[in-house]
Image (spheres, rainbow, N blue to C red):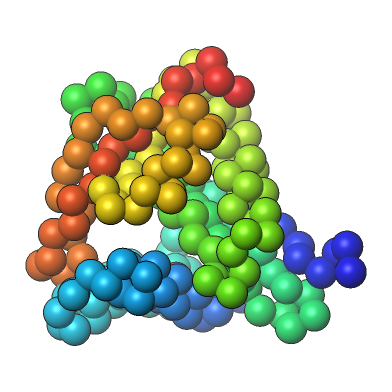
Length: 184
């Protein structure tokens, strides 16, 4: 079925399903695939602050952010998502309010290798370049996720720094990647 997977902007009614997808894909990627031993209280704190239905709803409603989902129309389930907006990464070359960031791009494990990541990446990069013209686009990626780093490098991103990303009190070593503006 050609139209089985629909890419669309997230809406408020997606808050609960998107919250569940954010938590599921985070656990699949970092706890199950990479076996990062996050303490349970740190995961709960992280999810409460950044992936609860309320937190997701506030991000969907934020006019400075854009959130996209891919929905499986046969099951009415969300299978992938991306979010972009103003860059908040700690790097000296970032111009606050002028640079954009791809904040999230996750695909459910059972839906990987179907082109969902590419579809989301293309729509997010287009949105970012339209809003942050002539400025770089930024992303952070866990230092141990070589597959994601390779994916982003294929879109012109290069590693330009690192920082500690907090999951509760746990600190992940993240790479900061930048894509020059002229690459669209």
